Each structure stands twice: as structure tokens, then as C-alpha cells.
Length: 345
Image (cartoon, rainbow, N blue to C red; front, side):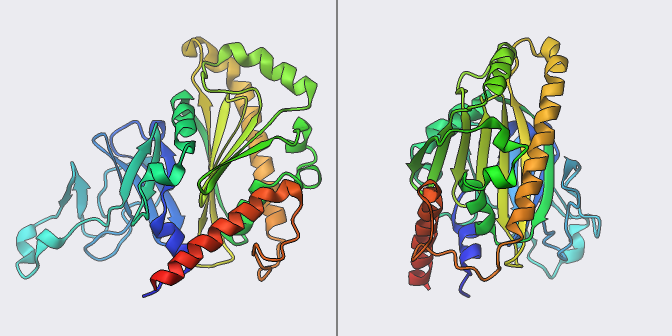
């Protein structure tokens, strides 16, 4: 059965889904919704497992919460998973079944530093998909110490609308007047790595830069740069940071409803100098960043739902400014992937 473009992207590309430090303990889990159902990342005695959140017995979902720590055991009939094996209560009652065929629907995983990527049937290996961006992500991942916050809600638009909004700066003065616009970002420099891109822009607000420079002594982030950085990881993920003190990992995952996108963002902070002493000192800073991020994403949510559902997202005859070059690049990449998909049907 042919897959839609959104399904094809979900199945055939690697997705940056978590940082190692989000699941430090046995039985820790994260759950995400997307076009293919539920995606769960689970710590099974130190092995991070990615799988479809469906019990192979009768189809009940193993986990309901967005995250937590819980045995992987089905509340319906007690089937579970532990230490790399499916656990079936009273297997002798299934004499007419070939229980050797019973298994979780697991997905492929790969690491880029401490970032966990997930894929189902990837077209390439992870390093090929990332290109030279892999080296950047490895460094960033090693700077990250722990997660600070998580936010989830659906965007009322196509995933590509949300991604295009995150790629361009032109909307910032109007949409983020009292939040992101206060940084007074300069135009910056775009770099491209395969289908991925990175924006690095210096901050023009001198009061902000003085404040950021003052707190540099609290952070041990060897790969940080004194700018605003936004990394786009094709097709559904972003990683953004100001000065490398905090990072926001965002996923815009498509749903079965084309006008609905499952959005999640996790905020992390980098390693601290003398963490035990400085954790409380930087707490107000982290809380202020969390509040600003939450407001910015809500502003994006409100503007994205204004986009007409049938507005063409095409590279042909696009009315795009020079500073929207990454949108044009994205559209060409998506069209290239779609042509490959159609040629395989």
C-alpha cells in the first residue's frame, strides 16, 4: 500500500527524539504521538529501546503518560517486556499459537553523541543523513547536562507550515515583538548540511549580551558560541540555543489529520561549574528562559493556525524574500524526497 509523503518521511528518515540524560534510570520512558501511532523510548536496564506503544497480544497501549518511570506491563492481560524479552503470563495457555512470533514492534536506533535518533526503514545511515552536521550535534550533546522542562500540544496546521515558520526570521518583529525580538538578532549566516541547516546570528541587544556574558562563569559548555543558534534537523526537528547555556529540542511530528501537528519541546541546560553550588544560583535564569520559550511557542502556534490549509507549499513560483532562503531550500528538499517516493511506488 503506498504511503503518503508524511508517512514516507516518518518511516524513512532518522528523527532526533531524545537526549541520553532524559532517561537515566531503568524503566524511564518518553512517549510521543505521530502519524504512525505512539512512539515510546524506554530504558530497559540501560538499553534505550524505541517501539510502537502497542501490546502484540490484543493491541492495548502499554503506556498512557507522556513520560515517567514504569514497568513495561500491559494493564489489559499482563503481557510485558523486560531485559530484552517479551514476558507472557501463562504461556502454556497459548498452545495453538506460535509465541516465538510474538514481539514488540521495535524501531531502529542510532546515536549522534548523546542524541538518540529513531528510524523505521531509513534510506541511509544516520551519518549520511546528517552530513557534517553530525560533528556539530556531537559537541552540543556533550555540553548538555540535564533536562529542565517539557511542553506538548498540537499545532493546528501542517507540520511543514510549523517548520517553515521556525526557519525564517521575517515574522519575528510582528509575532514575537516582546519576546524573541528583544534579542535584536542580526541577519546571521545560514549553513547547509545535506537536507539540514544551521543559522548563527549575533545578538544586537547590548543589555542582553552583557547579562549573558556575566553568567558565563557558571557554565561549562566548551562548544558554546556567543550567538543565537538554530539547528534544523530534517525533517521534523530543531535544536536552538542562546550562548549554549540552554538548548531547546523541538519536534513537529505529523499526524493522521493533515491539519494537526504534534509539537513537543524539551529545554535542557549545559553543564555547570561546581554544579552543586551553582544549581540554585542559575535557577531564576532557567525559569526565565523557560517562560520566554513557552510564550514564543504559543505565539508561533497562534500565527501558524492562520495559514490557509490549502495554501501551496511549493518551490515553484514562491514569493519568498532573501531572508526566507531556508524555506525555499526546505521545499526543494521535500519535493526531491516526494519524487523519490513516487518513483518507488
